[in-house]
Length: 185
Image (cartoon, helix red, strand yellow):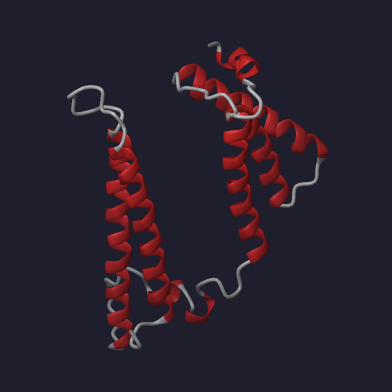
């Protein structure tokens, strides 16, 4: 492990996270009742996503090992997958990241999950879009009010109205009466 470059170690970490998420996708997808013996059923797309994530995670690791080996041997080939000028070793990773913004986006995701269970899809999407705009520094009142409303209406119409997805009621307050006006259910 000591012969691995910093970038390679980061890419192995990314691979581990991708594998973990893909494993969660596969586990949850396997629990979906197929409701038929057809090849394409309700669990098909989640399983395709899981397998694709596993393959891409493996590709990240293979490329990281390949590049690590080439750089450690001092070799530079014209057919390298990642040219040496594509990155600087000291410039890669989380050292210079805006951690506040990263934490804010993660917080928005957590808030979305909590709001989803408490108030349902409509309110969770509305408030989460508002929080994401705040996290990225938008302070224009028209944008902070208008974009979440328009975005939520579009999402509600596409997913619940056109695609016919189930709009679960919130545990605390049920807003499905209002959201059904948009989706037409």
